[in-house]
Length: 137
Image 1 (cartoon, helix red, strand yellow):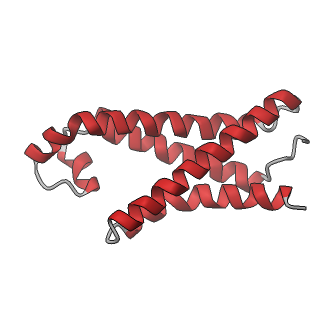
Image 2: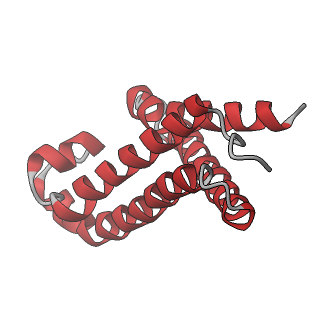
Image 3: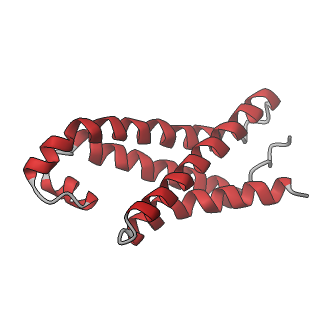
């Protein structure tokens, strides 16, 4: 594996996907009880938001960890240290694949949430596409 094991465009989109998921953490774990946060997730009122608060808090930390994994993995791929790069490739692929699967599940479970599906899924799909295309040859 070389230092260019991830095309720059893929690295940028892996980092972008990670930043988006870190923003989800902020909404779900830090600002959840504010209407501007929970309304973005289709929650109808404060009582419903309060009922979902613990679940949102947990989901937020899931998003934070997966986001950080994508960012750290994309950065470590360019270290030139083979062992770190192998670890980094695993981080990027696992984090971005999980994001894509979650976006597909959201699309299936809430077909009217197309914009959130695209926000959640497009960046990691681009990152994975570039990564796999580079390694397919």
